[in-house]
Length: 307
Image 1 (cartoon, one colour):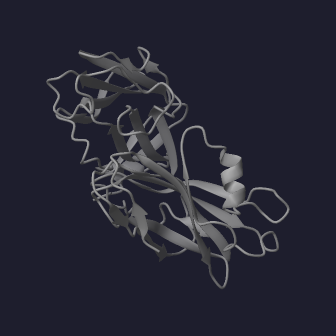
Image 2 (cartoon, rainbow, N blue to C red):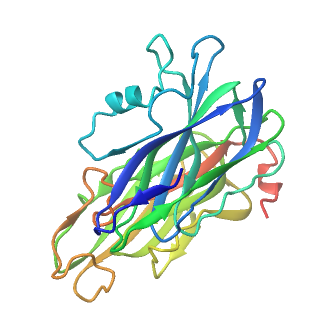
């Protein structure tokens, strides 16, 4: 059913569910999201809920979408969506099975890498889909494509630096009015990993983003450099082949934000203080985030092509 959005220049956030019922437990190679209205769909984060046999009688009951904000009681929303098992417990959740940002395409990995288990009764759970401000009424009809495949040999994992992640942003993530500020976040690697893809993320006043790693021997390993950030074009970047990152390396991301009148993307005129301290996903607030998709390292990974 198409979703109608009012043209009042306000951000809107929804929690949604897409129930999936199949004849038997099986596997997915990938889950692909297609934004119905690219003008207003800013981002989407989806997880997979898998119900064990006999734990959930009807995955289609409950509401299918609920608008929310930062003060929403998520446990109450989960109950209204009827996401829980019949006994009130939560089903198994596989995080971040599909994500979307402007310009992003679904990343396809080589055979045997990635993929997800799908139970007879499962649900694609969007814990957050963000529609950006619009001055006119709009309609969105976004949808998913599911690609079935063999059992995943090597499931992927994810590291998040900065906003909503495992590493602090330094200095405190506040950009005063009429200022240009630089921020940094850093994460040590606890075991050898093979990096599959990277995803930098900022909002409107972001200007420069770059990331690199420092090996235990002190060598610098370039990861990405974006000298002119474009909020409307955010992407998942892969390397020609998997990039080995050894234990003890430090991954570092640095970003520059321009909160002045000279930044034509500034959502406030005149400029006002902008923060990202609470992890707000509103377009008019800020985020500084670096997402890394990886595998535990296997000998020879660096020779596997990702092209």
